[in-house]
Length: 212
Image (cartoon, rainbow, N blue to C red; front, side, top):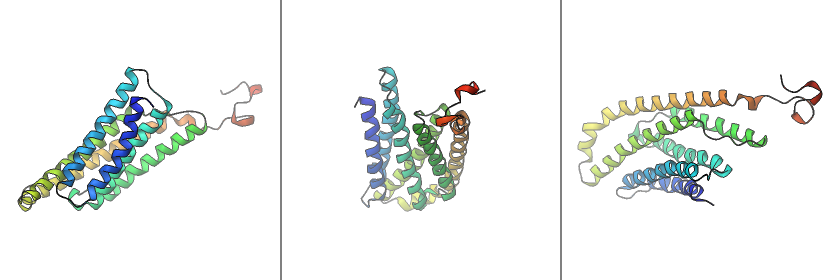
């Protein structure tokens, strides 16, 4: 396994570590979760760059890189719904995760036809917006965590929590809109997957001259 694929695999492991840190009840767990998520985001940046620079792009990387992203991003958003301090609406998370299931289904459909669909340009923008939203929310949680550790948590809530609730709602709305938009673009770019072939074996009939 080459270095980019090792980084992708590491990101999958970090997704479970991140989820564990979000829910373990120890001092500064949110700060630790922030650090782990930031590390995972760095592996996402560098695995792609290394793969392209050294010609190490593989089918494993094309398939598992988006899967690794989805694992840690979905873990964060689902957890945010239950963590009341984040003010993340459940319906936005449902839309985001539904989009990811649909695109994953497309990739499985493509695999059944002998194709591997890499992440598109709009998908990368979507991922950047999701990662940015998660980091911003985690930053609030980490600072709040440290404030409570220093005995100033109540004062912190008085100053920031009400304003953060509105900010987080609009931030998540923007992220949800970009997620839906990128999904529609991906469906449009790969709509040929949904066209059934003609002739025997699901392929164009040679006698008919192929596809028009």
